[in-house]
Image 1 (tube, helix red, strand yellow):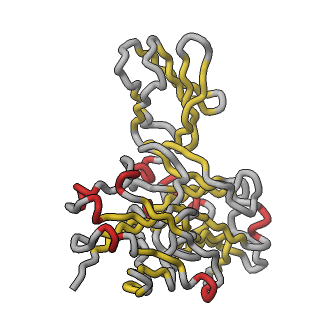
Image 2 (cartoon, helix red, strand yellow; image 1 turned 60 degrees about the vertical axis):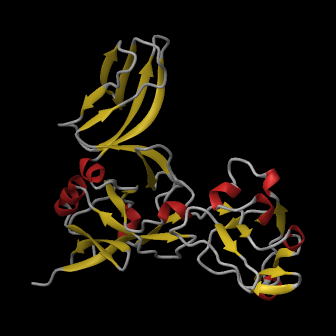
Length: 334
């Protein structure tokens, strides 16, 4: 007996820094989704970074069991530790996870929205110190409420026995409910510390023509910063140090222009001369006037020069493991 499968849909991850079909996540299948896949004679496999969801089909190519309209959720567990340095956040807050769903259009994933992942319990810190407060979890006609009077208390909900799915959090300080964060009850994904969740409501059309979904992450933009420290230089020497972009024309990109910033103009965001162990007169910062997108590709022709002589032909660029596009370059005279 031959068992035949066909592709229902795929999910790939594109990242503006790491590239298309990036393999920096492991897809996690929570128990509820795994059970639904088994019941509908579907399977999910990750191959070379892409999630493939397949369905068993009959000789006439129709599915053995149709999952149209069913919600399938998959977690994305991060494998690349430098991800947060080179990614525009899709979710904010310590418990926030990015949710990518095909709610607006069946064949594409919406931009990320934020959900709080929860397992067997959920503690909610009210947005105000005022008490009493009633905190509720709401899903359709279901409502689970807790009332608290202690100012520092965080109402805790026992989620055991709840079916996986989305809930919304509401706070009521006596003037009517105010909608708080969205909660996604998925114990397996909470335990796996998933950074993102893909939720696909299976379109009937996918059985006739498989769909390809893409989770997209953007890379941030930040100024390039090059601190030049030269203990053996005089004040006049420091005035002859320059940073210029000599490679923009050949690379076909906009010129990166720099502003020279002296320590007298440094603020809290800059590296203080004392931190670098150098006199302020021996330090200068070259900062790009416009922010530059984070990228693993080097910037050819970004040069450091002294008195017109090129000392460094291609200045370094921050990699994924670096939180900031910031470098300290030490110069000395022979």
